[in-house]
Length: 383
Image (cartoon, rainbow, N blue to C red; front, top):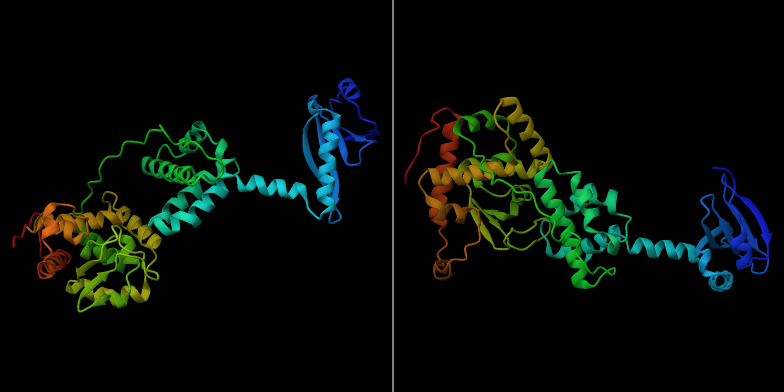
């Protein structure tokens, strides 16, 4: 861009109106009556006032406004800016900081620090979605200025992945809902309101015996424990050796140390079958990363030529096997630590640990038989 032309003279409103822009470069007019006041005439014919000063030995520019405010008001602005500089302040830097404080990136950071870390057990997943799909496009925008159309443009980039689309929409909405409730950053409306979620089919993937036999030899300890216990992938990754006593894995409902707590905040106990107990020590010693286990499983199902399998499909396969062996849905819900809000659960305070022990042992024996080639895919065992 060509360097601007510079001139110094007494600025008046009449003189400013008479100025003709240079089509090739901006023209700067320094006011002879007020130190630090500069009129900028842009090639587009737009005219604006800026304050010029030095801070820490470096030049600073602070935009005052359009030239339509008049010379007298512009001079008053410059006087106030120079007074702040004399007090040791840097008005341009302060303005930039104020703008950053009102951005969606700053709002999201406040939401994570003040709310999500303390209240939302899955905050890391939502945080990753925001950082990957939202901040690159909306991070620098004022949070209060983000409209529904802006959110739709972000979601359009992940429209081919319905699950990511819905979770990203939920993550953005959670940030704005918190801001409205806490009256943060001047946010008054949630731009996610009325944006439709993608319809999702209920996941139905369950591994058959043949698929278990194909995958088992190459599964890591995380994936094997999910299949043997029905625990959630995050729970298995965070398993601590001190939580295993007498063949029972105790899961505290509340977070303690590296343990994230259970999803429904209820304490949970899972008896470990012999195959599961044999894996625990190795698992805690090596502790495969969750992403590494996911990538491993992805390579395995592709290599074996079977339909896609996710770690959660292993949990579903465990639940289906429990029912398939004849133990019923109540046992499934109990072993998966699903919240039971029925009236019966209020009165029935029995722990069912002996029954659960028999169930997980039956699952362990069945998987061992499948891996060794001693069980058919259509075998149904009853109690």
